[in-house]
Image 1: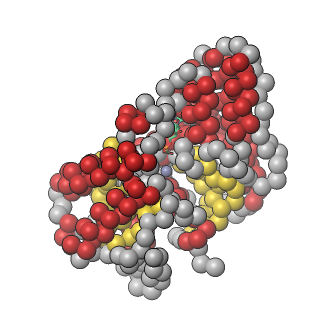
Image 2: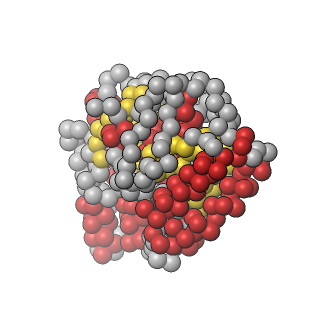
Image 3: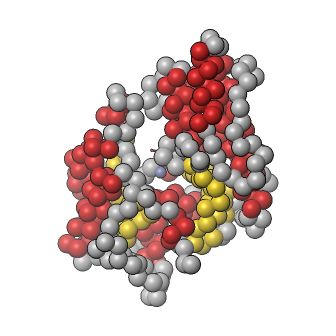
Length: 349
Ligand code: KG4
Ligand code: ZN
């Protein structure tokens, strides 16, 4: 059962170190930040090798891998930070959205650690953690001021969010079908590339002609900033069937995705004229064509965190926990992980 969150009634401006745990998909990750948000220790274990032969993340395998790794990784990261659990001032773990098995593993571990050491526990929303990463001290000369736009482009999520304050998020648009990383992975598979295929496809595209294959640009110009990629995937399948060069299909696909994302970002900026920046997160942010298109899409500065902080990681979870702890928040140990947990549900009505 979900218990409600405690309101922000006792701000704690100067908490000590916070440990973060991420286990919502196929990255097992642990990090410790000091009270100012400096990284004292971090580790990420990417499970993709364990899922590759199935061509996608297998939830059961993911949950078991999190269980096998997490304890050792928490010990290792605490040792790297030269801290014991008693030195922490909070434990934050991703509690959704994501695969329920992994969420249970990570959140239960976090709760156990918090209970054992008598610390506050913070159940972090994974999307909120991506949204707040750009505010991590030292990442950019000036952290973005609220409100700013987040475009989240990963294997599991594809959405545009107005980040209006801590705990105040408004989803401006989302995908009607596949996430953009999923579209890259499916197109890559049609081109005979290994999973996860995004980076392989980008390398192949570098040798191709982006004008060679006419591909659709789903929802281009449409009001709002929803996304759709399944038509593009079908068009790639047809282009493969017609015998176009693989390099040319890859380049044309990448160009179509970049054009769509840039158009959607432009619409998002129009929906939030007060926005101070466009922040990009998620594994697809690694793609240079996508980055270049987003940088040109709006007059806003494009803030792209370093790749290890764009993909799934625990620094972002610890940071979201620290921000919430500073605001006087904590969650009851009875809080349940949520496989579906829309960002909008964190905001006050
Ligand atoms: O955020 P992320 O690391 O984790 C999950 O969503 O699980 O994103 C992974 C996604 C995959 O779909 C992968 O193919 C895609 O990001 N990706 C890329 C590139 N690198 C990773 N897509 C396009 N170009 C890339 N260079
Ligand atoms: Zn993510």
